[in-house]
Image (cartoon, helix red, strand yellow):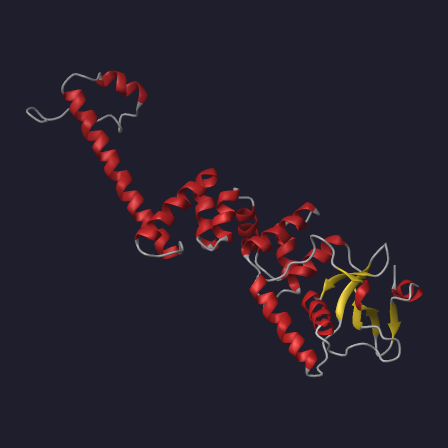
Length: 276
C-alpha cells in the first residue's frame, strides 16, 4: 500500500507534506519499544508544552495498515503528545475541516527492518537491556545474525551477543534486573559463568549487598561477594581435606578405596605420626 491508497481512503492529504488524521494512526502490538515509562512520560509532557506554546513537531513515520490508516513506526511520543494536547483544549484542528493532522513519512521496509528501526529511533534515550534483548531476539527470529544486528543498530557484535545471552537467562534473573536490584552488567557476567544457577548466585550477591546496607548488586558488590564465596569455598575444601586426612590416619577410611574415586593429587597424605 502507498500514499495513493491512504489518499483514496481520505485518511491522508497533501499539504506541506503528506499528512494523516490523528485517529487513523494505530499502534502495532509488539513493535513499539519506548524508553523507561518515566522518560517517555517526561518527553510526552515536554512536547505537549511545546505544542501549547505554538511549536511544531517533526514528521512521524508510519507504514500503511491493511485494514486502513497507518501503523506507527517512529513517533509514539509525538502522537501521544498531540492527542493529549487536543484533549486539553489546545486548538490543533485544521480550521477548514476540523480534523487533527500529523505530517508523516512513509516507511517501506520489511518486518525485520522495522524492528531494527525501532531500536535506532530510540538512540539518545534509555532502553533497558531487557528491552534491547527483546528487540534483538525478534531479529534473530527473522534470521539475522548477531553481526548483522550489530551493523544495523551501530553496536559491536560482542554487545549484541551479550544482550542476547542476558535475554536467554531464566526469569528470576530478568526479575532482578527489571526491578533494579541487580545491574545488567553483573547479571550478564554471572549468567556467562553460572548458567542455570545464575539466579541462585545473584540472590547470594543480593544478600551480601543488603548486609552492606546497599539495595543494588553493582560490579563492586558482586566482586566482594565473589571474594567471600571463594574464601568460604577454599575454607570448606581445606576443612574437608583435614577431616579426610584424620579419618585415614585413624583407619576409619580406606585410603586405597578413596584413591579409586580421586586422582592421586587429591588423595590426602597420611597424617604424620602422632598427628591428629
